Amino acid sequence: MQSITLQAPAKVNLQVRAGPLRDDRYHDITLVYQAISLYDTLTITYQKGVTINISGTQSERIPTDDANLVLKAAKALGAHVGIEPQLHFDLVKVIPTQAGLGGGSSDAAAALVGCNILWGSNVSDDDLMAIGARLGEDVPFFIMGMMALGSGHRQPLVSLQAGAHKWNWVLGVLSAGLSTKEVFEKYDQLSGQMGSAEEYAINRQRCIGISWDIHPQDLTSALVNDLEAPSVELLSEIDVALRAGKKAGASASLMSGSGSTCAFLAKDEAHAKDLKLELQQATVFKDVLLASGPVEGVRILHEQK
Image (cartoon, rainbow, N blue to C red; front, side):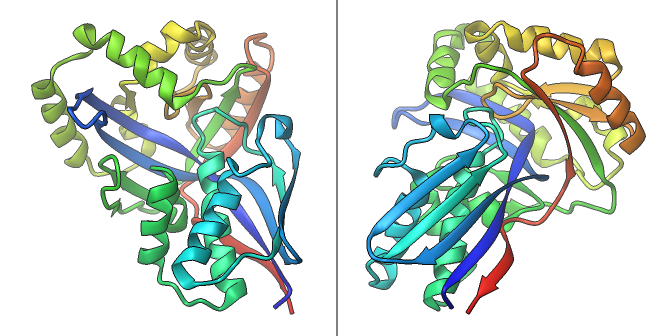
């Protein structure tokens, strides 16, 4: 096989529950992931050396050196199977960067899946997920896709029953992004107002006990993000965006991940289209996108032999 092209989905977090900073400098965290139908495209081709070309949405904000997650993923898998990567990566971005939608992690997952197939390495999905976990907390989810429960740093994901119900989303993309590191630093600064370890434990158990396979309109009260408050402190436009969604008639408005994208739940596809038109009038958004979930994780689009 000479090349392979893959689709890498975005995600929204239906719930984010965070605890205080631990002694190991990580936070207890519980997340519910849902893969959604917004995709980057990654093509991997044999060549001498390792290079990457990035085009599309906010491509200028993504490094093309050794800091790039796609290159890190290829080298990590190569080290695992004893292969020196000799590849060119062509990444077309649609998922906004530093937006809480997991684009970088999904691209890394696509590199793992694609290189595994291209090299004929036969590394299992479980092992790919373990390699991905060393690259970023969200990477394993994009190999799995659909819906899953995450429990923090290098903890295994638990697949969730998605049911037959479709979630219709309108995504409000802001001009400015937020790094996960700065959001958690602000969270720690606000920790006195954000709740105790005991409160986190209660919230975590409530999250685990939710049946996520029922109709989305019956789950609106469960859509909660503990990182919203610190993110709003860093970027006040998030609060403006969330209020715009509520005013426009969204069933629920929440920030995805550590921000800055805001996700608005619609009742159905027609409502989503109407909601998109309404939100496009709000000056706070750089772009307004439609997506739905849950969808599969990284998938193959094309193989060339």
